[in-house]
Amino acid sequence: MTQNDTIVALATPSGSGAIAVIRLSGTSAIVIADKQFKSVSGKALANQKTHTIHLGHIVDGDKELDEVLVSVFKNPNSYTGEDVVEISCHGSTYIQQEIIQLFLRSGCRMANAGEFTLRAFLNGKLDLSQAEAVADVIASDNEASHKIAMQQMRGGFSSEIAKLREELMNFASLIELELDFAEEDVEFADRSAFKELIDRISFVLKRLIDSFAVGNVIKNGIPVAIVGEPNVGKSTLLNALLNEERAIVSDIAGTTRDTIEDEIVIDGVGFRFIDTAGIRDTEDVVESIGIQKTFEKIAQAQVVIYLFEASEKELSKLQLEIEKIKNKYPQKPLVVIANKVDQLNEVELSKLDVISSAVEKSHFLKISAKHGEGVDSLKETLSNFVNTGALRNDETIVTNTRHYDALLKAFEEIQKVKYGLDSGLSGDLMAIDIRQALFHFGEITGEITTDDLLGNIFANFCIGK
Image 1 (cartoon, rainbow, N blue to C red):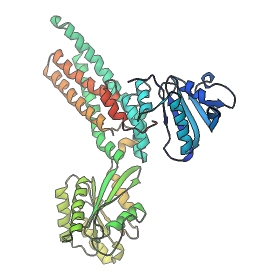
Image 2: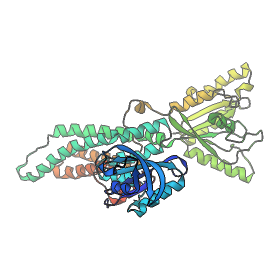
Image 3: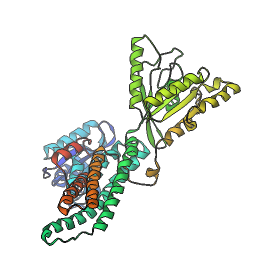
C-alpha cells in the first residue's frame, strides 16, 4: 500500500452548510496547500508551528475562491501520522468542489473510503480495533453505543488483548526454547505458572465472548415485535411509544396490512419497535401476507410484546395464546399487556390480577395506549431486559463481529493448550496451539493483517475519514 502520495477529501458531510472542512494528508500536504493559500499575515504554512490555525484565502491564480481558516498538523503529531492540512471554508457545495478540484490539479488525489484512518493505522497511530472503533463512534446513535465505541477507541479493548498476548508470547518463547534443548530434556517454562496464565486467559476470553450478546444489541438496537389480534391497539401503542402519529389508527379490524418500524432510545439503548398485522383467520389475500410477515418479525425480534384488549379477553383463551408464543419462541422475553384499561370499572380491573398470575408478574402490564397510561412502565420493563451493568462499570464490551469470531477461535486454541498441560503433552505439540492462539489475538489488534482484511474493514468507512 503506497503512502507516498497526498490525498484530499471533504471531511464533513456533503451538501450545503455553514462551513465545510477539506482535509489533505501526505508528504506534500503542506507544500501543496501553501501554493494555493495566501495568508493575511503573508507567512508560509511550511514555516508555521504544528497545531496552529491561519486566516487567509484560497486562490486559483488570480481568482479568489474563498476566505478560509487553515489548520496545520505536522508529522508525526497528526491524526494520520503524516503532514495534515485541514481547510475550513464556507459550506457552499460550489466552493467545496472548486477547492477540491484545485488541489486535485495541484498534485493530490481523492482519498479512498477510510483512507485517512487506514494511514493512521499503518503509521502506528491506532491499532486495528481502535481504527474500527472510529467508524463505530461516527455511527453511534445512542448513549450506550457511543460509550462502548469511545472506550474501544481509547484502547480499552485492545490493551486488554495486547496484555494477554504479551504474557502468552513470553511463555511461548520459553516453550520454543525448550524445543532447541529437546535432547537435554529441560523445562524453561514453569508449568504451574503457565497453567495459571492459561486459566486466567480462558476466564478473560469467556467474559469478552459473553459480552458480545450485550454489545451486539446495544450497537444494533433491540428489535421488539408488537403482536396480538386485530384492533387491540397495537398501532396506538406504537404511536404512544414514539410520541407521534407513526401508524394509522382505525376502528376497522385489519388496518395494518404490513409491518411498520421505528426506533426510540430508552436509558441510552436503542429499541426498534415493529407494529405487525393483527393475527386472525382471514380470507383477505393481502391481510394474509401481512399476518405471515408478523410471524417472520416475531422470529427476528429479541423481545415480543403480546397485546390484548382487557375488556374482551377470556382467561382460558389468553393462557392458550401465551403458551403458544412461549412454546414456539422459548428464548424470547415475552411482555403481556392488557390494553384499554381506562374502559374498565374497579371489578373488571381486579379480575386482571387473575390474569397476571398466569404470566410472570414482572412481564405483565396494564396500560391505556390511547391515553399514554402505563407506557413509562413498559419502557422500564424493556430497559430491564438489557444487562447494562457491565457498561455502567466500564467493563470491556465486544460489539464487533470480527473480534467476536477471533475471540472464539482464540478461546478454542487456549482450551487445546489447557488440555495439553493437563495431559502432559510435549512442548512441540502445545507450541502449535499457542501459535494459533497468538495469531487470532494478533488479528484483533492488527499485528497480523492482510490487504484483503484491511480493504474489507476500511471500505465501510465514509470518504474523508
